Image (cartoon, rainbow, N blue to C red; front, top):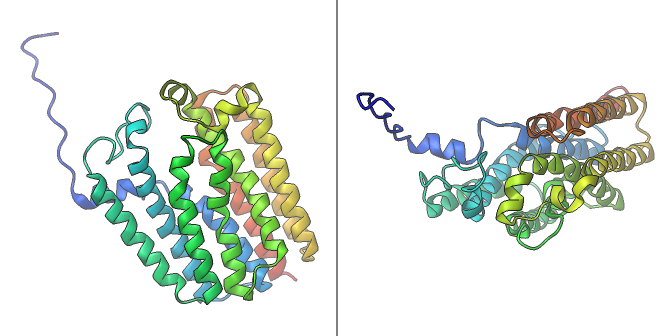
Amino acid sequence: MNPAAPAPAPMAPRGRLSLWLDLVRWNRPAGWLLLLWPTLASLWMAHGGFPGWKLLLVFSAGTVLMRSAGCAVNDVADAEFDRHVRRTAQRPVTSGQLRRGEALAVGAGLALCAFALVLLTNALTIALSVSALLIAVAYPYTKRWLAVPQAYLGVAFSFGIPMAFAAAAGNVPPLAWWLLAGNLFWVLAYDTEYAMVDRADDLRIGIRTSAITFGRLDVAAVMTSYAAYLLIWLLAGRSLGLGWPFTLGLLAAAAQALWHWRLIREREPAACFTAFRHNHWLGFAVFAGVAASYALH
């Protein structure tokens, strides 16, 4: 090293708002879109078409708020693990730029805003929202003991489905739980792709993930999960009499799943991350098929 060379300038301190936005992944909307599309599709199914602007805004904004709150809780719970993973080492809590108490306060504030929106619905939806919150808060800790924590995440990420039926129809029929089960398989598929990105780091630090548990069957497990998701939603849509636009949407989603197979089959981390990041388009295809079927009915 040249002794005359100047030392690197220290990183400039960041403003609180910038840190909070980074904490909740504001610049990475793919995360909340993964929750939004199945929730909106369920709203359309429960209502038999467009559910009205009130419910649309309540569930859209509520989804963004709760996903953001979940990110804050997750970063606090995983701070000691994240510092050993290259991709997550610079997150605000992990890097020490935000105190854990402040991060939890941000998350609590966002969750309260989401709860205020739920108060605009009905008692059943409010009760389900409390269950959804408890399930979401517990998720980060499942990575300590569950062999496939992504399955638990599937429940947490799918709870907008019964809530949508409760708000739009006033009850939660068996169909809603079937849709939740199908969506769980989709979450298992895309979050296994996500786990494949960090598999080497996770093995080193002792976190359990589906990518580690499935081992060399990881790609097969992802594709089987995609197939289960699309089949269950196909049967659910057919039971509601959804027509050719719905089928076309599922075919578009299936085509994307096949593209994901091409991306992940070599298990190259960057390609696996690309597959994960583009899953929201798969969910959008299914939602678009549902909405178009009711619009053209």
